[in-house]
Every structure is written in C-alpha cells, then in structure tokens.
Length: 426
Image (tube, rainbow, N blue to C red; front, top):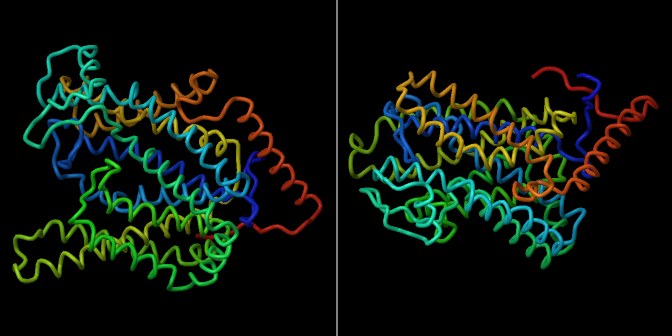
C-alpha cells in the first residue's frame, strides 16, 4: 500500500470502504455489459450486424446479480446517511440528488438513444430536432413488430427512479419505526449467521422469482414491475439493515470461497438449462424444471453477491485518493455511458469493424469520454447538480473529513493504538 492508502477496520461508526470499491467496479462493469448488449440477441436499443448468442454465456456471469448488488450497496449507503440525517432530511437530500439528474437525463442525455433507435429500427428520416419535438410531445407512433416506443423515456436511468423510490420508502419506514429499526438490525445481525446468511435470503429471492417473474416480467417502467420491486427492494432493505453489523460482513468474508463456488456452479447449470430449452423437456415436467431453474438463478444471484462482498471485505477495506475520486465519478459516468455507447456504435456501423475490435474500441472510448466529461462537469458549479454531485463547498468539506479520518488512522498507528492487522492470503 502506498502513502495514500490506509487500511481501516470496518466498525459501526466507520465507512465500509470495501463496498465503495465494489460499487465502483460494478458501475464500470456496466460499461462492458451494455457494450455487450449491442452484440447479443437480447433486446437492446440498437443492434450490431454481427449480433449473435456467442457471448451470452459470458454476459450471464454478471446479469443475475450485478444490479441487485448495486441496490444492496445503495441500501448500506442510505443507512449511513440516516446516521447523520433525520428521515425527512434524508428524503429531501435523496430527492434533490436523484430527481434532478433524472429529469436532466430524460431531457438531454437519453433522447439521443431513442433517436438512434428509431433511425435503425423504423428507418426514421427526420432530423434530431424534428425527433425532439415528437419526444417532448410524448409521441407513441414509432412502432415495429415488438411494439411501440413510449416517449419520453428514462432508458438506463430506470435505476435512478427505482433508487429514489426505495429511498423514500426507507425514509418513511424510519419515520414510523424510529429506534426500532436499529433493534431489528441488531436482531438480524445476530440471527443471520452461518448457513442462514445464504439460505434465508435465497429462500426469499427464489420465492419471488417463482411466484412473480412469469406474471410480472421485467419492464423497468416503475408501475406494475412487481417482480423487480420485490427483488431489488428486498436486497436494498437488507443492505440498510446489515450496514453496521460487522459480524455479518466478517461471516460473508469467511464464506467467500464457498459462495464463489456456488455462484460459478449455478452459472454453469443455467447455461446448460438455457441451451437445452423447454423443447426437449417433457411437457409434464416443464413447470417443475422451470421452478428449479428459478431457484438456481436465485442462488446464483445471492451467492455471487456474497462472494463479491466477501472478497472485497478481505482485500479492499482501505481508503485512498483513488477511491475518493472514483466514488464521485461513477454516478456521472453511469449517466453518460449508455448514450456514448449507442451513439458511437451507430456511427461506427458503416465501417463494419471486426466485432471484437469494435467492442474494445467502444469500451475504451466510452470510459475515456465519460471521465473526460466528468472532469468538465466537476469543475462547473451549475453542472454538478445535474449529474448528482454535491455542491463544490460540500464536496470539499467531505474530502477534508476523509483526509482527517485517514490522518487519525495514521496517528493511531504511530501511537500503537489497537487496529486491525493487514489480512494476508486470499
């Protein structure tokens, strides 16, 4: 570790830095994943001429758990915010930091995605300004065999809408429960130990998938998206409840290899199941195998989340200047990345590049352009709220607080005060 990196013990009063790192990596993974969506057969706004099922098994390595993990981390972050803010202050802060970027995104960032979509799918011939007039009027006449495009839309910013909704629900829950929320957290922290860390959440997630997935397929439309709400709000709430339970995170650390093995095994079984399909399964057995597959999917989802958190807890519980920079950057990068991917993919299409080379170029340029635009946004006060960033003075205060925390940790080392030793091994 360099002089800018200080290991910290994850105590109830300290930040879980390892989850900051996980959040950073998960958002960066979104760039790779959404680039991959251009090349697979699954639904996406535009498609490569080379789209096939070739990389779909690799996409499945993260698709069962990636977003659930982000919602769980968001729940943890919300719990720590509620240690500093009242429930009403928390709801106001979440509203300003999420709804302003959402509105800006729907008016400025997202429309190019829909424009290139109608150009490619329904051969729209109008200019972008012509399209924007239709977009703002709520035009629903862009239709193909899969249905009609509803405008305006939030596309990938559905995550922001759902996160705001769950934040308001958590704030309301805190208003009604008060100190009882901490009591529930303490109880669950004691009760969720050993095998129960895996099996209890698994049972809930599997039951949700068996009972709701067919009836309420994923739409990201907020209304009537009940499977996704049951799925994401449960892990968001679990994150909020487990945020300060250090024994829970230590147990997750201890189980990391078991959960990695479970996640990879379940992924393998899912790939085989999808390859076989329902066509060769006897009709009388289809429902049984479908339910079993959904249990395996839920186990893949939850064990992967535990494995990622376990390895991160073991190796990434430290602060650094890189962590502070990337923590601020990831949300603006998330807002920007999908529009950049779609716009560049559309303009690169006539070049007919090799899809592997083109994919690498898309990922590289999306990362560099996103961070380049972030560097501009972070320096202009009027732009910061549009991308979910704190005001400059508030951000500077947060950096000073972080630096003081690192300084206090260094002083503790000099004075030989108790601290957690660096962990060795994997």
